[in-house]
Image 1: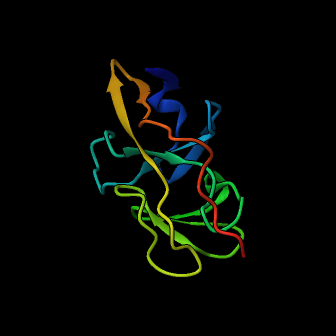
Image 2 (image 1 turned 90 degrees about the horizontal axis):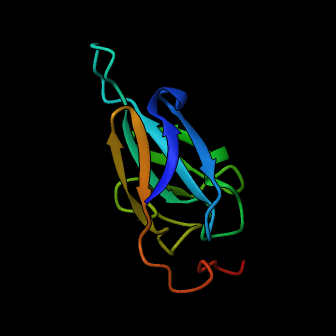
Length: 118
């Protein structure tokens, strides 16, 4: 597993980029909690499959992230795009939060990220 860091260091509604074999975007999404434990954590490959842009620089809306380059949106839970311009999903990764620390268990990597050529 890859150690990301303290959960408290990822503000709800924001993302961080983790350098691994391929860059990973780690998002903390608001779950509507009011007890201070708010913030489900998701991880996906950081590179948009439409064109090479960092998804951690995108805009978060619930469990969807919008690419900052051409507005392709991806579901953080499944990696699936919600429609054009992206057609290829991004890879998702398992997130483990243990003792206030965030860890990633990376999905198997089968080569370079598949990126559409526009």
